[in-house]
Length: 519
Image (tube, rainbow, N blue to C red):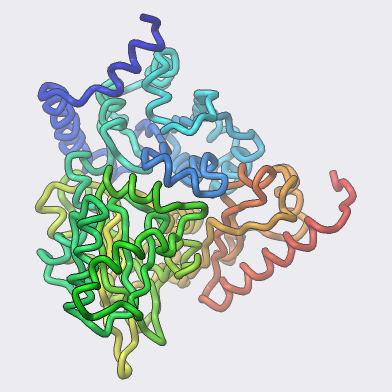
């Protein structure tokens, strides 16, 4: 067998007891050194950033420009502000030097040349629709280049978008711990596992059923849901490993019969569900349901309804920290697709959301969960007060992670869990509006260089003096897909929203007009 084929067979093999024990030992060593290393930013360390989308590939394929989502973790290049930190960033395909230069120039107080000398970029040169981690594991020479870039494995660790069996295999191949959740615990972040954790934490969740494995179980669960709550007009079906709402579907129940014909009526209606993912079919959805399982829940109605989330972190020594709260901006046919977020969440309920998130984190910490994660809610205003219903846990970095890290790194500020606000070192509050889905056909053809040109001429920068401005991400998706990410930071929500509107106006104007070359 060739060198390429041998690692491939290892990649697909289930973890052995010995491998699981070795991984536990790696993580235990990380915990023992964590406090000393992470509490002193001047100490040397190496961070291997692996932004692999090790998720369901058929669901991922429904997201426009998804292979560029490996760029969302480029915000972690701002770790290079710590003068003795080295970063290794691995991607499927090379990232434009213009994009790298853009991020390095966001570094406060660090010359770009100094930061660039401590950054190693490694590409698999493979744009195929497979998880990046699998590509790395199948390339012995790429593994060797990563090893060569790590001067001291004892002060190095991996950080990933999500941690699966693939990332665990890579950690063992490199002898590096992961700052993230053990894959053996990931079921607690599935839709079914989330419902069980919410019950254990004693917080409200939607009426529904979990651990559904096929169309028959789904129809039976919907039948029981409708009979339990006859006035229910809609229900939501979710794939266990769906993300960003792409695994969701809505079924209308308003016209459902109330007699013995309800179950066959539901079976007939399943193929006509409203799927959130573009191009999704019942045949594909049913196949995904059989392979990963799913849940069904009541659709929570409300004239005044928000979708907030709380972000939390459990570090390797077991310390639990509330990180942030956001109001998610949702779209799609039924308002279930993640489009962006506002930080912080509404003042009326941000601390209530945070408190419920902490209760969830306490349960997860007891189960051994590690790293950053989010808890999503639906909040409905009823008779002047808010009702909060927990809907899912994301045991990975999500769409709210990179905007908050950008804010944190750009301002050197801190989150105050007592107020739910973010404050700069001078005590100035910061808010932001962030989106991964600033998308328009007219933006196609704009290169990273064009975007930088537009930003410079129109003042679309982050200004350190005022702690306000604009930062871009997903820049690599712009030319091919007309898609871009943006974080607009302002002193309050109104200012952040105004910065976003101005950014859209500038991009619309510049992408439709013939522009002279400026330099």
